[in-house]
Image 1 (tube, rainbow, N blue to C red):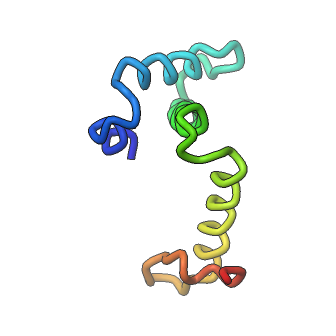
Image 2 (image 1 turned 45 degrees about the vertical axis):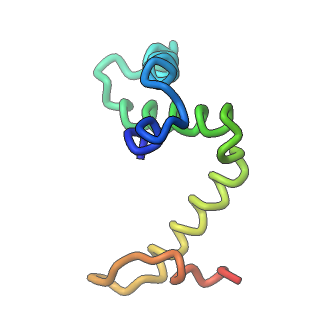
Image 3 (image 1 turned 60 degrees about the vertical axis):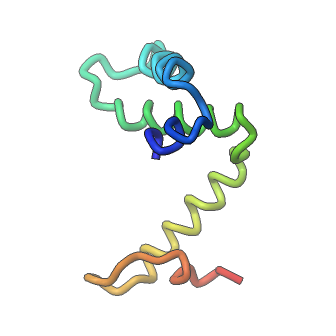
Length: 88
């Protein structure tokens, strides 16, 4: 997703590198890098908010919807947002 957004000009590679670097170098970052994925996600969410592509509240709502859809999807079936039982 990050690469696709960068390729479409939503943000530059240097903007991405800066955002990720801020996250990776946080004082509470794991010394062994085991939280790298969390930093990657936080950097992407920060850029989406900064660029006004998706507000943090929208990201949280979509995360919750996908989680509900995953729990409502039978094992072995594709997880679809349409499976969210709270979807209108």
